[in-house]
Image (spheres, rainbow, N blue to C red):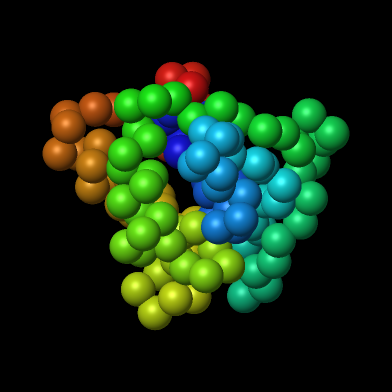
Length: 117
């Protein structure tokens, strides 16, 4: 979602299952997950700008992987969830990215994935 659809980490964490329309090949970005560093507060909010509220076309090549994710791992309400079904944390996404980046031998930031999309 970050690389091929250009979603930010908070948008990925806030993504609702209903926002992913695999029949129409569209992801509807409507919320952003916020996790404050100075407290344990976590909440969803509207995107910062009007342009942040958008529909993104899903390229064809990740489509089969998203179908598999939808059928096997997506939560009832959230598309990406932790193993216990709770909302996915931004740090969880980041740590998975760091492991994949290291394995691929790349030196990029998570936000750099957006430029691919």
